Amino acid sequence: MSRRATDEAPSFYLRAAVDLDESSTRSLLGEFPEAFDLASSAFSAAQVSGWSKGIVAAAANLGFFCVALGRSDEAEAHLAIAEQQQFSSPSYQLAILETRAQLALARQDYATAEQLLMSGRSLVRSAATWYSLSIAETEIRVLSRQERWHEAIKRADEALKIATKHEVRPFLVSLQLRRALAVAAIGGKLRSKD
Image (cartoon, rainbow, N blue to C red):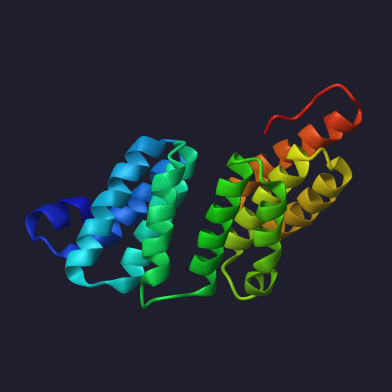
């Protein structure tokens, strides 16, 4: 219904909002190229409408999708745009910080990834639960890459309690899987490559 409304009576703000929503849904389904295209469309529409929050959301999402697609240099450019906007919130600051940590993780720069994640601890309390769980999942990945299995399990347990309490189901499976990989690695039967 919303997509049809944007086609019939174009509102750049509405188009940006609908494209952002669909982009998020596509990313949850693992459809990163499609999510990227929708976030690009949302970014353009948000720019035309002057919607600063939409620009931040789209640019931050584009950065994240670029990391998922292996386009690190492009990710940095999108994150820089997101940081230059007037709008800011703890949730988006965490999203940008986490994406930078994921870039460091991709470069196998574990110290930087961990430092970035630790620097966001103060923001976690005032951000939406989704973002704090996403940070936790990235932290577990960093710990696992360094074979710090006991810490990874402890962090997974903490995050699973939060995800269960707030019924954030998309994280339950991935956190349980990351925990299981760490437990298996301690038993010496499995080495995590993330």
